[in-house]
Length: 187
Image: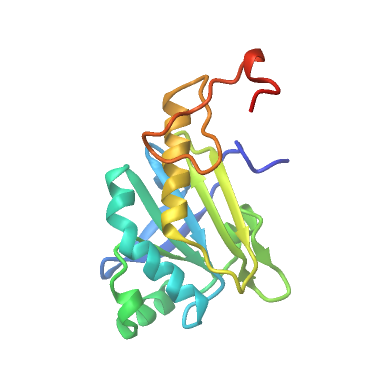
C-alpha cells in the first residue's frame, strides 16, 4: 500500500521532551500538522547536524502550527543522555521519541532490519493523520530544515486551497497553478 495519503499507524512510545519522559502516540499527531523525523542513532555524526538544524528552525515550524518529533531506535534514556552531553542536542525543544522495539520505524517503513536502525526518513502529516510528504535519504546525506519548511508551507497551502498546486521551487507568496486543460503543454 502506498504510504502517501495513508493514515499513521498506531504506536505508543516514550519521548524525552523538555527535561521529562512523556508518552507519545499516533493520537498526538492528529489535530495539527506534524513532522516525524527519523534518524539512525544518537551520538553519531550527521544526525546531530540535522537535529540541530531543526532546532534552529523550530520557532518557524511552530509559527505554522507544526510539531516536530525526532525518532531513532535508541531509548528515551539515551536521548536524555545525549541531550545532557551535547551542546547541539541540548538546544532541542521538540520531543525525541525512543523506538527500541522498532514499531514506529516499521510503521513508517524506514527500519533497516539487519542494523536495527532507522533510515533518514522525513514524514509530513496533516491534522487528519494522513502522510502528505515523504523524504528518504541515504545515511550519509543530511537533510535541510529550510527545505523541509518550504515543503510544509506548500503542503499547507495546497490543503487550504483546493484546486491549486505548488510548482517546483514554490515559495510562500509566489504564484501557484490551477491544473486545467488550458495548461496542458503550456508549461
